[in-house]
Image 1 (cartoon, rainbow, N blue to C red):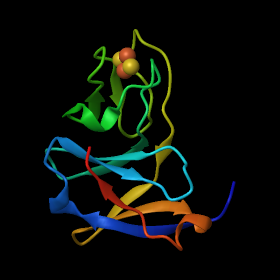
Image 2 (image 1 turned 180 degrees about the horizontal axis):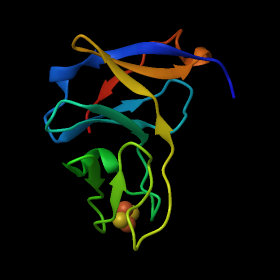
Image 3 (image 1 turned 135 degrees about the horizontal axis):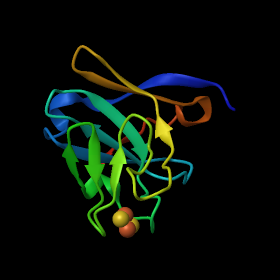
Length: 120
Ligand code: FES
């Protein structure tokens, strides 16, 4: 696994409560969805539902999970796992807050070009 570093991608208030922002990546890697819960926790997942690739960044956050907008699978934000009876997993990305700054653990190769929010 390549070395990773914490990279600031925006501010907490850029993300609506119970919503998400999408981050496109300079190297063409899959986009990342960064979620904010009602309690201001932050989580990040690859923006691709394990069912048929739906955009999780357009889903509704329910507690510590997100409902995919396409067919309603519920994906746990901390593990990326689909809740039963569905099965599958989306890759997680480590995320944390430093004050109100949102930080993601990204591969070193991506740090030269600062990632940023894009329209969801
Ligand atoms: S693509 Fe997400 S539930 Fe079908």
